[in-house]
Length: 333
Ligand SMILES: *Cc1c(COP(=O)(O)O)cnc(C)c1O
Image (cartoon, rainbow, N blue to C red; front, top):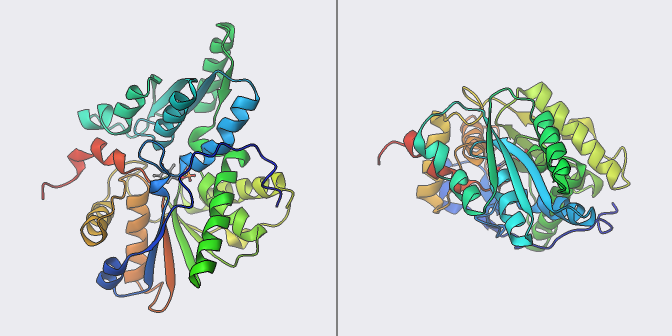
């Protein structure tokens, strides 16, 4: 895979740690649980968008951009990390935020990621649920161009083949860590949304023939469209790397049974998972992605899908700052 020829900003605090979770392992009584700490990427409270932005922002700079435009839900971690890197590089940043959950609570609308977006000096505009977000970004970019700006448009979640390279890099990093530690990983579990994370991981592991299966836990779409989206992007990513055809369709697996009522809407399983990991490991998950992914992992362990003697690695994709937007969802302890 021709990874090194792509321009990349080196901002991630990498390698992110791979740590055991002994107390959670003991509580659940199944497989040995590990955690890959991509919540510790170092950019403005961290998260998985940092690795994608290394490639996307390098491309923006190469294109001579002075402004970045992107989109997400109100409490988007991608929007926050984009705003932070734009601030660091002196680029203007425009964020189009979709009111995807309809939550009206003041913490959801003003705290967590939204507070940080504003702090980084990004221009925020809110649009109703169901808006064609790609079109909204194209219109905004056209307006900015008319004003003499040079905008660079980043898709939602940073999920295109260039952004997914960040998770090809992570796949290679994790395979090396496991190798050095003598750890045979039976499965890597991650939240999957806009698909770039899982697609990059799968493209990386498949391209390297690493033999590490990935299980995506969905946070929005049903299984069939989610797997199709991940597969398409994984194939395109492999192609970009000169490894066309490296990704087998059966290497793309998503379980979308833990979404609940919808994207960003709290579930009981999420509340339990966030609380359990906080109290057993002192680690903060997030209410929209890693909390629901961990709820899925906990349930699958309880159902016996993974068993004692197996090594399961959970990819912590970050987002805990979003907890401050969901104070209303957590019972007072
Ligand atoms: C964006 C995000 C994800 C999902 O990653 P995708 O590449 O969009 O599938 C998972 N966890 C967190 C915390 C995120 O912000």
